[in-house]
Image (tube, rainbow, N blue to C red; front, side, top):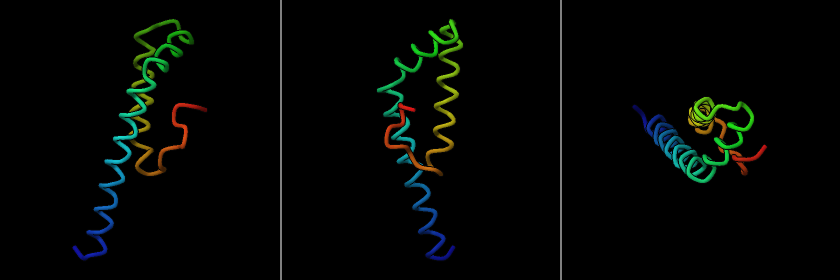
Length: 75
């Protein structure tokens, strides 16, 4: 592996770790509000938790590639 490839791999790993930290922080801060809002929308707490967790997984997939929005819990 040449220096350029190692540098790109390091940037990718750093971006992934950064995204994981951002997702974890958003989850800690916003999960109760997200699950509560979803529960009101779907009328089922268990389903609301499942939907919120699916959104978390989507964020873990997207944020390392696309970046985290300035206000990830809004809009």
